[in-house]
Length: 349
Length: 218
Image (cartoon, rainbow over all chains, first blue to last red; front, top):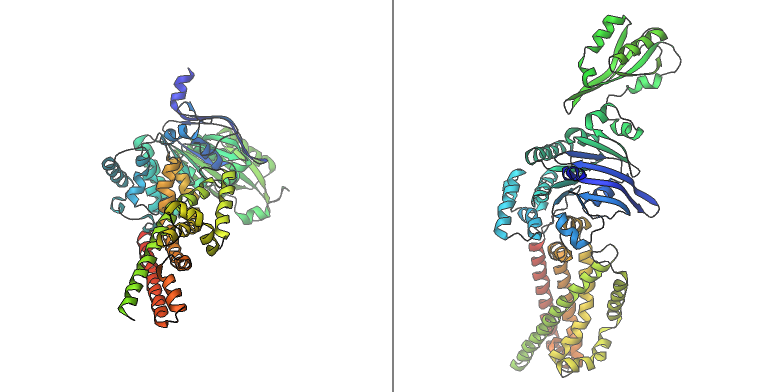
C-alpha cells in the first residue's frame, strides 16, 4: 500500500512549482528522499536549489505542488504548525550562521532551548555533540575564535541537537578549502552511517556528490533533468548540464589534441571509450589488442571507483582504415563499453 | 567658589544625572521595542506589515523633526497631566523622554537591521517563533550596537537636560544660565562646563567598556 511507502520516504515532493516574478525557480519538481540515504542535488547557481531546499522546512512556500515530510503534507501549514515540524529537520548553511553572541555550547544547545529542554539536559547534550564533531575543548569559545571548518562542525552539532529525522545541507562546504571540505564531508558520511540519518544536500560541486551521496538529482532551470545512483550518473550522464558539471571530474581529451581534431579521415582516428560496472572489470584493452590486431595508442584516460563501481573513460588513437575503426568500436560495444569517434588527427596524436 | 555655590553645583549635578538617567531609562524601555517593531514589520521582516511600518516611521520622524526647545513648551499640558507640575526636574523628564525615545528607536533600528539575515533564518529553521528570534538572535546579536547607541543617547540627554534648565528644570544648565551667564560668574560657568565634560567622559568610557565586554564578533 501507499502508506507503507510513505513511511519509508522521509521526503516526497510532487510537482513543486514556485515563481519569483516571471521567472520560475521551481518548475514542476518531483523527488523522493529515502530513509537513511544521502541525496545530493546539484545544479548551477540560480538553478532553483536553494528554493527547493527551503521548501522542505517551510522557509519557502511553493505556489503549487505538495511537500510530504515523513508522510505529512506541510506546504500549506501555518508558521505555528511548522515550528514543531522544523525541530525534526536540522539544517546547515554555507556561511554557518552561528550566533556570535553565544558560546559554542550555547549555539549547539539553542535548538533544545527552543524545544523547551531544561538547562542541565541541554548542557549534557551539547557536550555530547561537541564530542561527536571532535570539538570537545571549544565549548566555551565564541564562534569568532574558530576556523571555518570548526564553525561548520559546530553547525553540524547544532543541526543534530534535537535528533532530527532529516538533515538539510545548503552548500555547507562551499565556503571551505578542499581539505576542510573533505573532513566535513567525512563527518557527514560518518553521521549518516552511524545514526542512519537521512541527508539532503545541495551543492554546485560534483566532488561533494561524488564523495558522499548515494543518489544524485541534477537540477536545471527549476527542473530535475537527471536522477539516479551517483555512479550511474557519472558513468552515463544523459543531459548536457550534467556533462558540463562533470567536466572537471572526468578525463577529458587533452586540449592540444582537441584543437587539432578534424572530421576528415586523415591520420589517426580518436576514439572515446566509456566503461563502467562489469564492463570495466574485464581485460578490455589487452583483449582488443589480441583479437583485432589494429594498432592503437592510449592517449589519455582514467578509471575511478564510485560507490564501489569502476567508472572509466579512455581516449585511444587508432591507426587504420575507417573499417578498422568500426571494427574496434563494434568489438568494444559488444563488451559493454560505449564508444564515440571524436575525429581524426594528422601526424602524431 | 563659596560653600553655598559648591553645594548648588553638587545639587545641580545630581539633578542633571537624575534627569539623564530617568529619561534615558524610559527612552531605552520605549525606544528598543519601537526599533524592533520597525525592523520586524519592514519588508522581509519577521512580522512584515508595511502599512504599520510606514505609519510608525512617520510618527517617529514627526517627533524627531520638532526642535527640542519647542517640544519642551508644547508638551507642558501633557507634563502637567503626568507629573502635576510643569516646573522642576521631574517635569523635565517628560519632554526629555519623549524626545529621546524616537531618537533611540532609530539608533536601535540601525543596529538591529545589521544582524545577518542568515541568523534569523537559522533560528526559524530550528523551529523558533518570533519571540525566540527577538530574544535569542536580534537583541543579543545587536547588543554591542544597542549599548553603543544608548551611550550616544545618554550623552545627547546630558546636553538636552541643560536646555530643559531654561524652563526651570534645575540641573547644570539652569545653574550655568542663571549664575554663570546672567550674573557673569565665570567661575561657575567654568565649573559647570568642567563637570559636564567629566560626566560625558564617564558615560562614554563606561559605554565603551561595556561594548568591548559584550562584543564577541571579532
